[in-house]
Length: 427
Ligand SMILES: [Zn+2]
Image (cartoon, rainbow, N blue to C red; front, side, top):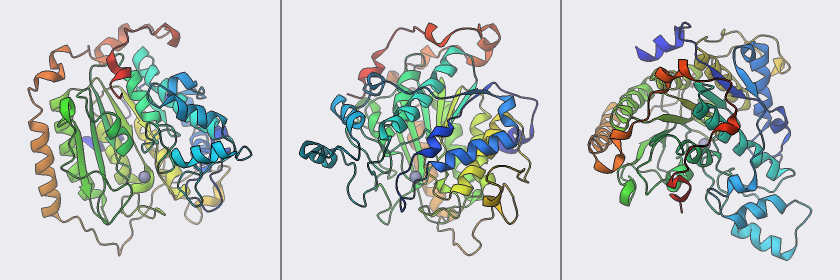
């Protein structure tokens, strides 16, 4: 099988960039808020304890500028995020908080100290990850503090304020005619889908829980894009209790078909870890191995790949998952026994990297249901074959054949591709 082969084949070592920022772990959404940026500090610490940092190019994310964020977001929204602090609540600010969906009492998107710096670092890491791929310096770029897929053009949503994914994809579109976006968070990747809903230059594919008023409520199989983008938004609505075997059965054929039909120049993968078993908000039953199998499967296509985080509300399991996926992306699967680290006691009593599924959680995704969804989605993808607007004939040269000739000393600042209409396509 593709996935297991990639998991255990250490010969195909790729050049991996890893964005590591321990400062992100210090931001605090609030005591009862499920989003804990502290999970990043644990993940990075495991990365050091396992020695993985020695096999990668490690970067501290640069903070994105307001201008960079305004390539997608409304400037008044970015201006607001830059200026607002918990201590500056004038009447004007209170009105804006409501308008931009920030800071409502018990709301999803609280106002906290350092909010803009938190957003700017998340955006900067993802944009620079895209640039590492574009410059040819790295085959894979990992930024676990990115992947905040719910943020809208002028509105915070679902714990997300600035949509680093949309910004990174816009950057990639300066070089690649087509970008494939894959999302395995338990929630629908609505912010990214909405941003690219009317273009054929980004194919968005989201696998998520749908129904029972589950957040954000969008992502039915019939939501397929609009206008020029019709058919280029793919939704795979799933039910509670999704397990490893069922997930692979639906994920692998759909991803294979999407890549075959669309021939993307690069892939952006959002790896939200709230699709794992035992998540505080999620309702799936994936193990770390099952989640990582999806990442390994995508890696096996050997396309430039930007790997991002996302949701994940059981911080021990988030760290387990993203550490293991880092190792899988490196081609050196990590030992199942967690070595000594600063958060050693978090992993008691078994100190295992892997997790067990919940034994009495019913998988409501019957084989019949999954086959029905799969055939609808595959039919949608088949209809994209030969679509005249998708610029299939302008496939950029493969990164992999070019890699050997690429000047690896090339400075990021040297990237000066002709700007395309990309920056305008979300307007
Ligand atoms: Zn989520």
